[in-house]
Amino acid sequence: MLLANTPETGGRVNGPRHVAIIMDGNGRWAVARGRPRLFGHHSGARRVREIVTSCPDLGVKYVTIFAFSTENWKRTQSEVAGLMSLFRRYIMKEMQAFVKENVRVRFIGDRLKLDDKLRGLMDEAEEMTQQCTGTNLTIALNYGGRDEVSRAAKRLATDVASGRLSPDAIDEETLPKYLDTYFLPDPDLVIRTSGEARISNFLLWQSAYAEYEFIDTLWPDFTPDVFAELIWNYGARDRRYGAVTA
Image 1 (tube, rainbow, N blue to C red):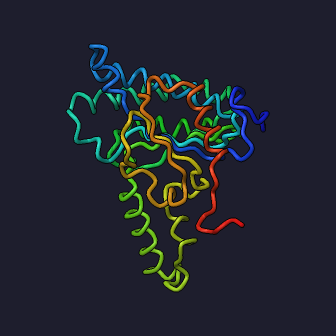
Image 2: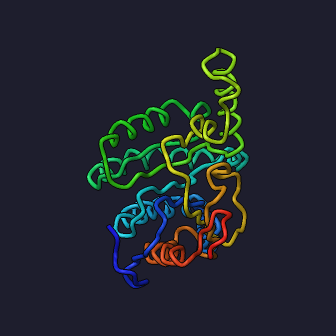
């Protein structure tokens, strides 16, 4: 639904259809309050549903969130274990709500390193919501952009070796069909919270022409109002894709 073109309502003329979010700052938010880092991760997880449920009124059809990267395994064992437990509880708790709100949930990333219970819950969530036709929520879990492209290249090479794909057929339209995000349009807008101005190996191929917003707000403080303001700002940008307007 397109809203009136006012920042107060969050409406826009040419708003983003797909928004990707690097949810950063949970640990720092907790430490600043004298709490353990996992407290911040729990607070950040509660913020996700608020943002997802605000999407229909903002005209956002797809939202992709960066939950856990391939590099996050380098964190302390206790924090990683706590995050994995959080992911399991989050999926069990939120899926019924997402079904009710007509949100389709899917996951991207390498699932092989994740434990069996978590993988089973991910499969169950995707199955439970596959008939939902509203907002598409994609959760990047054990995801890294370079890892994704490497895995895609291996699958592509396998198809070439087996004769299912001609090398001459490989172009920039072919490779995306082998990426984890083959079912998604490319993101129009990528948001990173917490004041860091880097993309951290997130959607490297897909974000070639995305607009970026690097904001100081820590993820647990990222409200639907902040989100709406960024959607509004996007509508004011001139997107030329390399062309020159008259």
